[in-house]
Each structure stands twice: as structure tokens, then as C-alpha cells.
Amino acid sequence: MSVRQRVLLLVVAAGTFTVAELAGWWSSRSGGLLVVAQVLHHPVLFGLLTLAALSAAVIIGVRNLVVRGLVVVAAALSGLMAVPLVLFGGAGPEVTLNHAAPDRADRHLVVEQGAAMIDPLWWVYVDEGSGLTKRRWHVGHINGDASALIKASWAGPDRVRLVTGSAEDKQVHLVDLTASGEPLRTVSLG
Image (cartoon, rainbow, N blue to C red; front, top):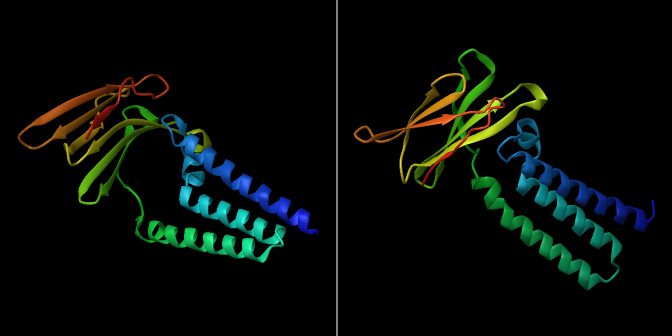
């Protein structure tokens, strides 16, 4: 394999990693395909793979030792800056609730809980469908700095009930869903 072919192969690999991450990012939006988002939406991983492929392409394709050295240093520094993201980024949010809708086995209310430093965070979703075609709809986001998610439940097969606030001051949010599971409104606190 010639140098030109190796460089082209590495550039194509970098482009493939970028397209894969973009597909994952696009699928992570409300209504996106859940499996695609879970498999492909990893920006740090795909960013490092793209950086490695492009750096290798420059190192192989450029004959100037100064340029090669600069690329090696820049890639190493970029990789080192990503280490804290990988080490301290955590495992991500934890699923704390996953309940099927009444009379609807293909529709689930999902709550994930995480943290922003010391404040808890809650993400509320409705998963619609099954298998590779399952879609995830964003129903709400609650920041513990502004409020707390006390309870999330079904108020019928097409309605989600969220109770937020504190034990003394509760607020009830009812979110109606379309036939496809898309919420007609979202709840965002904080």
C-alpha cells in the first residue's frame, strides 16, 4: 500500500468517525432513534478517534520532521486534555424509573437521575416502540437547584404526571402525548 493510499484510508476513517458521531448526536434529539443514540453518541471517543486518524495521516503524509513533531505534540496534548473527561466524566445518569404505560407495552416512562456537581438532575423521557425503531421523546428536565422531582407516573396511556417541588410546596405538571408518543409540551425547571 502506497503512502497516498494510507493517508487516504486514514482521512476516510476520520470522516467515518465524524459521520458516526453526527448520526448519534442527531438521534439523541427528542424523537430520535434510541439505539442509534446509545451506540453512536460518544463525542469524546469519536473525537479522539478522529484526532488520532488525522494525526496519523499527517505524520505519514508529510515529510517535514518539524511538522510531524508539532502534530505529535498537538495530538498528545489534546489526548491528555481528554483524559479528565474520560476519568471524571462519570458513568452518566442512572435510570431510576422505567414503567410501561397502562395498556401500552410499547410505551415506557423513563426517568434518569444524575448530578451537576452537588445538585441532582432529572431527565424524563417517553420511549415509544420497540427494538431498533424505538424512539425517545424528551418530556422534561428538572434541575435540583430550582426544584426536585418528587414523583413521575402515568395518568393514563397518553398522559404523564410529574410532581415537582418540595414536601410543603408541590406542583403537578400534566403532559399529554400524541399517538406517536411525542409530548405536546415539555417541563423544564432550572
